[in-house]
Length: 197
Image: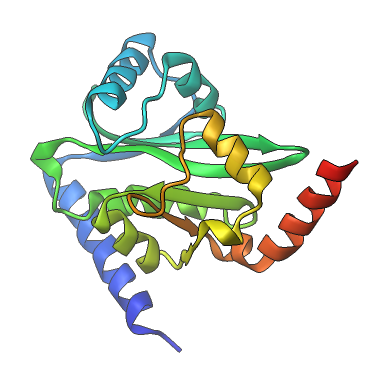
C-alpha cells in the first residue's frame, strides 16, 4: 500500500529529475575530484552557517564513501557527501556537506541528492544531523526517523563531538535511517559492553 509520504517522495523526485533534464544538469557519483574543488567546498563549509566546517582532508576521506555532484558541463552546482564515523568496530555514516547553488534551489534537487545518497546506505547505520527545517522535512519524506540524544549511545555522541557535532537538540535534529532505527537498542547495548571491556 502506498502511503501519502511515499507518493509525495516519488512525485518530488520525478519533478527534480525533470528539472535537471530541462536545465542540462547531470548528477554523478564521484570518488575522485580535483584539489581545487575540494578547496572550494571546504571554504564554502567554513563560510556558510548551515554547513559544518569540513577541511580538505576530511573531504578527501569522505570521497572514499562516494559523493554526488550536480554538474553542468565542468561546473559543479551542488554536492552531498557521506562522512564515515568509526565507533569501535562499527561504521556510522552521516550525510554531510549538502549544498545547492542558489540558482537551482527550490527545485527539490537537495531532496534528490539526499535520496540518492540515502539509497546507498540502506543496510548501514546512517544518521542526519541538521538545523534546517527543510532538511528535517526531507528526512521524513525519505523515511528517516527523528530520534533524541537520549536514544543514542553516549559513545556515538562522543564520536560526533570530536568533529564538532555538539549535543544541541535546541538547534539540531537527529534522524536515522530505518536500518539504524531497527538496530539502535542493540547497537547501544553492544557499545556499552565494549566500553566496559
